[in-house]
Every structure is written in structure tokens, then in C-alpha cells.
Amino acid sequence: MNPKWMRFAPSLFGLLSLAAWEAAVRLAGVPVYVLPGPLAIIAAFFADPVGLLGSLASTLIVTVTALMTSATLGVALALAMSASRLARAAILPWAVVLQVTPIVAIAPLVIIWVGDPFTSLVVCATIVAFFPVFANTAAGLASAPAELNDLFRLYGASRRDTLFLLRLPAALPYFLAGLRISGGLALVGAVVAEFVAGSGGFASGLAYRILESGYRLQVARMFAALVLLSLTGIAINVGLGALDEALLRRRGETHNTRESVP
Image 1 (cartoon, rainbow, N blue to C red):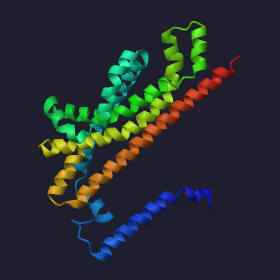
Image 2 (image 1 turned 135 degrees about the horizontal axis):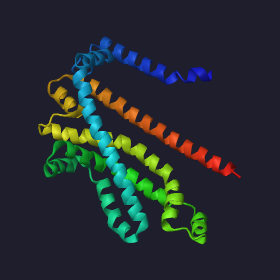
Image 3 (image 1 turned 120 degrees about the vertical axis):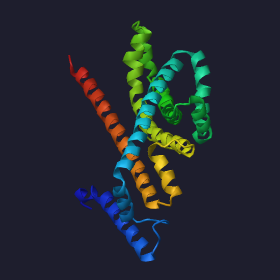
Image 4 (image 1 turned 180 degrees about the vertical axis):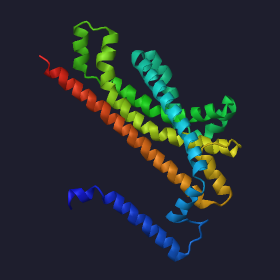
């Protein structure tokens, strides 16, 4: 197949799938409240674009805040753990506990303990998104080649120089990979927390719109909110992937330039 056509294959497949979905729903006479077709979902979105996009903005604010918080905490705790065995013994078990505890089980407690709705949502999303950044950064800090560590030690480099010139650059690809994973998890955590908060009467975010639409049997509107969430997740993944590629390419260009200087 022509490589130029290969670029359009996913889009063409998606359009054909949507057309088949719409045709199947119409031919089978499936009610909209059971399974709406793509046209009904689009119509539901345009019936209330301001409300759905406003809820999406609320979810995005929680997601971005949680991602930044989890990245900061993950890097800080990974650095502390790599610098001290005592810190490693104290931090690692709690990090694993947070990773394996279902957020849906502790979200009601977090909302009660924290009190403030927005902060509660951020805390829940941060718990979900924290571990990939933390674990990947810790692995990256330990990934510096042993011979380079020995070389830095031989030339009398301080711990600060070793950290900033060797270990942190080695950890950058690992951190960016963890950040890309955490981006999607932050969105998942925000949605789960919004479901719990929405059940308790706190109206915010797309998850609440999904609950509200389900209670009213507005299934097309529910699908519209789900599509927005899916597109948001894809956008976050693509954006963080572009950041990953740009930073690593820049680091590679800088490294090559330094090597070429006599």
C-alpha cells in the first residue's frame, strides 16, 4: 500500500466504523435511550455545548493541578529515597500502599477529611497519578552507569555535581515516561473523585454530567460527555508525548554539540 495512504488509514477506519454504527442503530430501530448513534451524540453535545465544555474545564483544572502535584512529589520523594537508605525504607512502603489501594474505596474518606471540594478532588487524582512518576524517576536516578559513577568519584566530584551532571540527566527519559503515564491516570483519578463527589451532591466536572444524564436517561448526552473525556485523554497523551520528544531531542542535540566542540 502507498505510504501516503497509510497516514489516512486510521481516520478512514474511524469514519467507516461510525457510519456502520449509525446504520446499525437506525436499521435495528434501537431506542436512543439504549444506544444512541453518532449523530444523536453530536446533537446532544450541540444542545448544551457551554455546560459540557464548562464541566470539561473543571475536570481539566483538577487533572492539571493533580499532575503537577504528583510530578513534584514524585521527583522530590525519589530524590530523597535515592539519597538515603533510611528515607527509602520509610517512603517506599507507603508509596506501594497508595498504589495498590483502590481510589474509589478511599475517595469518600478523603472528601470528608479534606473538606474543601476542589482540594479533595486534587488529592484523589494525585494519589492515582503519583506512583508512575515516583517509580520511574527513582529507577532513572539509579540507572546511571556504574563506570560513570566511578569516574565522577575518581575526579572528586561532589554529590551535588554528581546529581545534577549525571544522575538527573540519566533520569530524565524515565521521568518523562512516568509523566506521560501519570497524565492519563490524573484524568482517571479526577473523574473517579468527581463521581464520588457528585453522588454526594457536589456538582462539578464531566463525571457529574454523566451521573446527571444517567439519572435522567439522557444517554446521548452521557455519550457526549464520555467522548469529551476520551478526546481529552488522547490530547493529554499526545501533548506529553510531544513534550517528551522535544526535550529528549533537545538534550540529544546539546549532547552532540558539546561532543563536537574541540
